[in-house]
Length: 357
Ligand SMILES: *Cc1c(COP(=O)(O)O)cnc(C)c1O
Image (cartoon, rainbow, N blue to C red):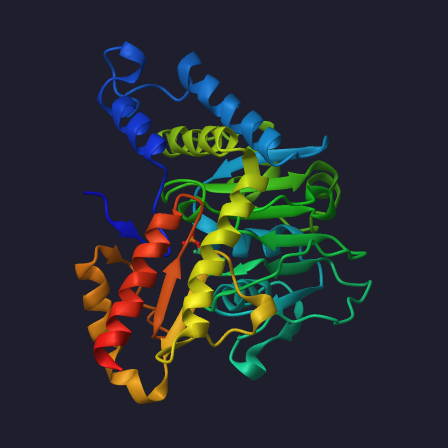
């Protein structure tokens, strides 16, 4: 039986991805070869790469003048690559938790960082209403904070280049891509298995805004753009799996449908938390993530947290332990997670509370 998977990343993936990828691993298209055994330069894989790129453009309505790239190194490598390429002297970063702090650390190698942070309230809200000075090289935001459970739902209007880490809410809602100069993330939260990184970048930004310093070939975005993400050997099976996700999102009705289901799932779980006398969500209501639902036990029940993780696991709900840096619980409800998954968790919460409160 397939469990109710709430892992934060790697995470639950669609059944069609699992089925089609595993078949291709055993014998791809009846070629008598595994997808793991074929050349990335062959016409079969080239077609997969081309379709992954074109589906990405279609599903997200990416306008002309943008490139879709696949790289290695995860979103964490992007923290370094972004600053290496685009930080000339100073950039602005919105610090909403662990991941943006790591991005800021890399930016400081190359210049000054103007930081707006929600640290004053332990990252339980998303900063708003700050000024964006015009002399910044770019503004960097993290649209969904996987560990803290906050999310920004609007596409910001700013007068400087906008770069967004969308690792954990990519493909979960329609995005006005034209407002961004670059969007990136590790695949392992909404797009596919760990091991490939996606970048959507505005060509004019990539070509004209690069800092005047020597940049190693593999760390230049243009290297990937000029070579169809195949300057070196790409992660073949990962890109195959990404294409499966994109096909699945399209078949499900696209990102608007993903958003609708995400709201239903999140409403169900947040309502259960808010109605409970045992569980509480520390995040302010308007900034609550639809993808990573963070909650804790009220002080008087705190010592029962480990018991609840075990209780939920008996009900086949796995992956709900909070990030090691914050404790409590986190139910990650990415695109492939279903209402039934969330219903099972809500029932476990209610039953646990009835027994223990
Ligand atoms: C998981 C995550 C990262 C790190 O991704 P890696 O691919 O492991 O480097 C960065 N940013 C956000 C928002 C994440 O959720």
